[in-house]
Length: 211
Image 1: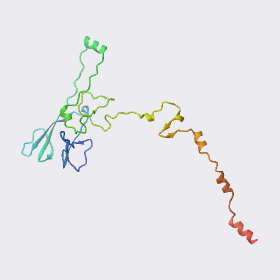
Image 2: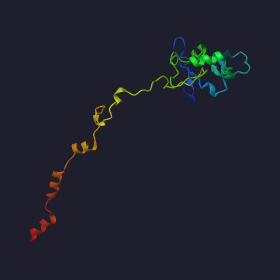
Image 3: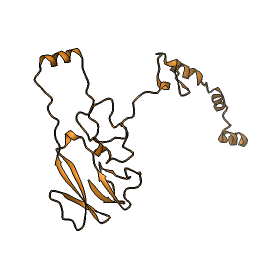
Image 4: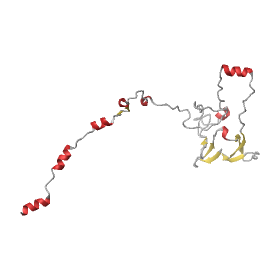
């Protein structure tokens, strides 16, 4: 978490909190509060508490000061990220029977409400997970501009036939080499005929007149 001036360059990997949760108005006018989301499994510590205190308040222990905003100091405290608990249990007869009879897929845990409310309104209410992978026991993940965008080929580019000569791609018909040579064949007869009728040489004309 960083507090920077509005004119400063945004740090790499950080996103600014630009609007309020309730009215979607501009959150800060002269400064920007930036946060960074990373995969939960890739770190051992994360911000677990944030406090906004007045100047007269004593600095809380184990908190880091990042700056002042409207005469109020912003502090945060780091904490250890709990690891996913090992779900391995001793197999029993009932568990083996249930596993053989049917496979139940447990959905990923939803993002906690207090974390969801800290995101800008442009990120809230959208599905940040993609069907091609699953997040196991995770709450915070980096948000990409391509998240939620399905990958598919347009129907106009689909070709069920193997005959490329019948394909019409955006008005361009694919032709064979023989068809191209036949269509654009040119003998250059006019050019050759014009080149054969050379004008009389000035040297020869002057010699014949002197004789």
